[in-house]
Image 1 (cartoon, rainbow, N blue to C red):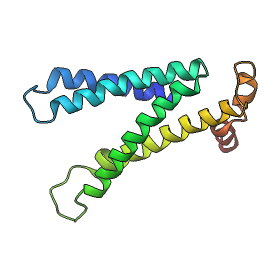
Image 2 (image 1 turned 90 degrees about the vertical axis):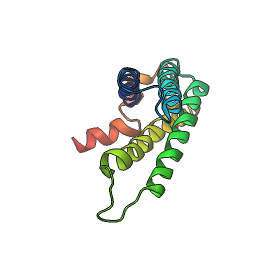
Image 3 (image 1 turned 180 degrees about the horizontal axis):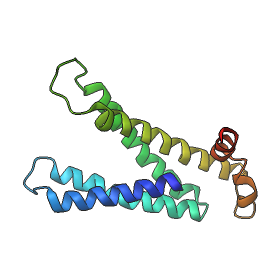
Image 4 (image 1 turned 30 degrees about the vertical axis):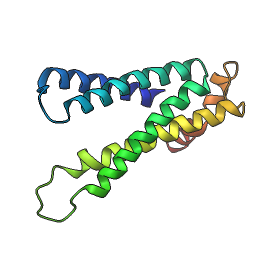
Length: 142
C-alpha cells in the first residue's frame, strides 16, 4: 500500500504541474493528461482494493502497471544510448520509471497471490504481514 500511496501523490503532483505549466496546444498534451488522470484513478482504486482485500480491484491496478511497464520497456529500447548524443538524464527519465514499475508490479502481484491463497485475510493481516514477502526481508536486513 505504501508504494501505491507514493505513486498516488506523485501522480497528483505531476497532474497538477502539467495542468499549471503545460500548454494545451503542445503535442502530446492530451495523451499526458489521459495517462496522468488514469494513473490517479487507478492508483486510488488499487489502494481501496487493497484496503478491502479485493483481488479484482487490485488486478485492475496490476493491469495498468503492466501497461506502464511495457511503455517503460519501450522507452529503454527507443532511447539513444550512444555517448555524446543529445539525451536527457537516462537515470531519471528511463531507468527510474522502469525500476519503480517493477516494484509496483511485484507488490500488487504478491498481494493478489497472498490474498487468494489465504496468507493475508482481514482477520490475520496484522499477524501475517510481518512474515509476508517484503516485511520479513526488510526486518532481516535491518
